[in-house]
Length: 232
Image 1 (cartoon, one colour):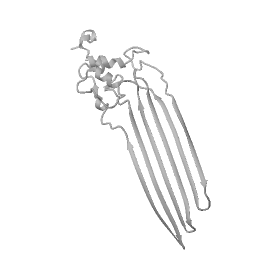
Image 2: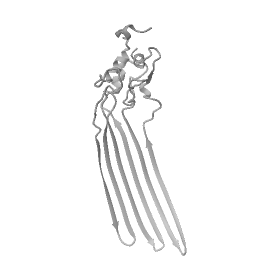
Image 3: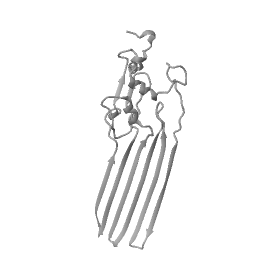
Image 4: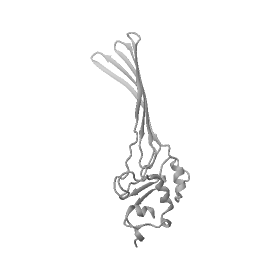
């Protein structure tokens, strides 16, 4: 049965929906019930700072050493949807490569190599998503969640809230040791060696939508309008 004047009585609007609406801005372009009724420009600053240092040392006809170090820091503002503040995306890269070549004899050469690569990247957001979610009064969500985020609200036509996870750190790290021994005997060349690597990859594990914060979908099942279904 339609609401009188197509207006939902205030007493029937769900308290959780009212709390979620605090993240939705009022229209500033066009009218309230048209598409593209909110426009805003937000900064997306990108800063990249880094350097490379390389050194080569010749110790004589038998030994030479090489080394290189790479340093890079990247920071970027990532605007978020609706009234949420921008996230800070970051990446930290550190790389070190060294090698030493030693001539044991005219027909015997040894080369040692070491490599280290560590790449950390992720994002953070100043919005206190857990406190906001706990204040909504959702059942079986919280009160403690180990990452910052928000519930996902999927609407059929209106703008959805799907920022989901707002914090996380990823790491890709490789440590490598290698040693090669080359032996030249007459017309034959023999090469022996060993290569050892330690690899670590870590990233936030997600399964569906906002994971621990919950995912909610609204169509037009009850009121023939997705936003009205969300309100009640």
